[in-house]
Length: 62
Ligand SMILES: [Zn+2]
Image 1: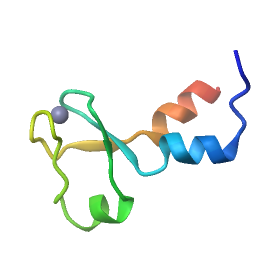
Image 2: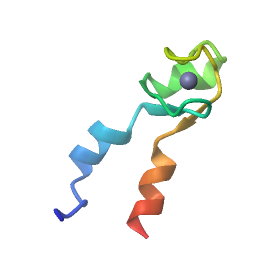
Image 3: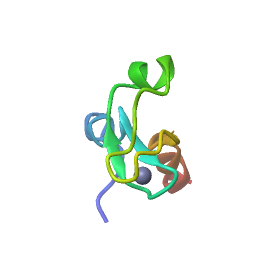
Image 4: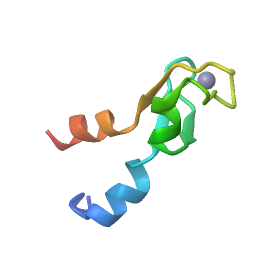
């Protein structure tokens, strides 16, 4: 497997990427928008329960 230590690629793949808690759909949106209100909705199921993709990255790195 390739090394996962490229910060540029990590940013592109995980920064501003959120995952729907309901259906696990990936959503690209600025974190500002998510934090301000729950004005971001999942395209798939319409839920506003999102989590940052970041957390998954941390798990993988262990
Ligand atoms: Zn969803």
